[in-house]
Length: 106
Image (cartoon, rainbow, N blue to C red; front, top):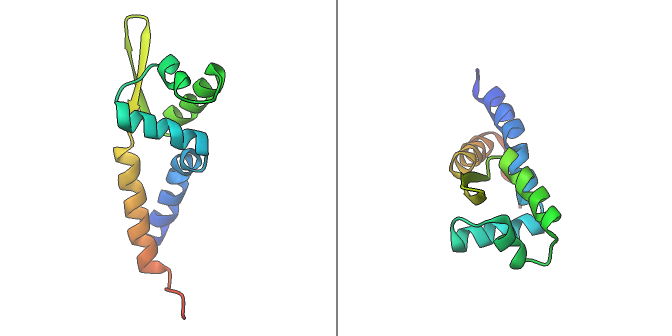
């Protein structure tokens, strides 16, 4: 696969994480997880002005995008950040775009 095709594939692969990053409520959840590490849905809900179903909905989107991970301990589910692979993909995409996108002429 040539670099341009690889860049297009990376763009497509990054859409889910871009979707996560495009929402302010998900920003707040990411911030909480960054500050606190593992958290239960109820703990996240208590720190936000969102309903529990809304928080669960956002976490589902974030799980699908590999932005968070979940570990079940007993009856509790703990969420934590898990964006390392996605950040690496975005970094690779940025580098390829720098290479192929001309800079703006001032």
